[in-house]
Amino acid sequence: MKLLLDYDASSDVLYISIGEPVPSLSYDTDTGILIRRGIVTKKLTGATIMDYTKIRRDPKFLEKLMQGPEVKQGMDEFDAMLAAGQITIEVEPVQFTKQEIDIAMGKTSLTANGTK
Image 1 (cartoon, rainbow, N blue to C red):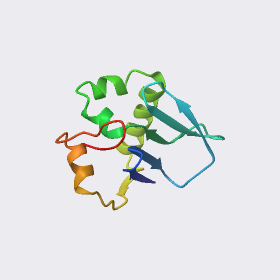
Image 2: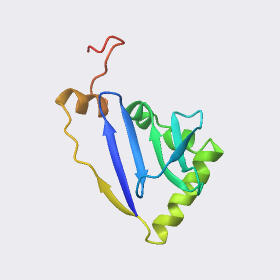
Image 3: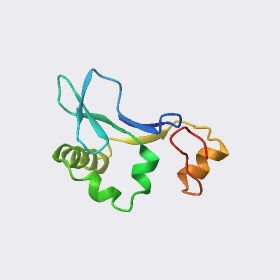
């Protein structure tokens, strides 16, 4: 089973997919993270992290990440699949602009209208 990471820089959203695409439902965790589960199997199929760079720079990122029981359960399932050797990690190549890299590294920020 493959783990696919796809980052949409224009929306600052990180999409995480586990295995082949299957019909899934997304569950809002109220932490900026959506957990996806297969409609039939109810197994973890992925996650979507909104405002990824903003959330990731937060020093309490991991603490906030684990607040919702859905996220904790999803992470436990993911850890079990990883430990069992059921997941290989594949990252899509992504091209970033210098401005996007600077923002991600916290060297600059954007105003509400998208300018420095």
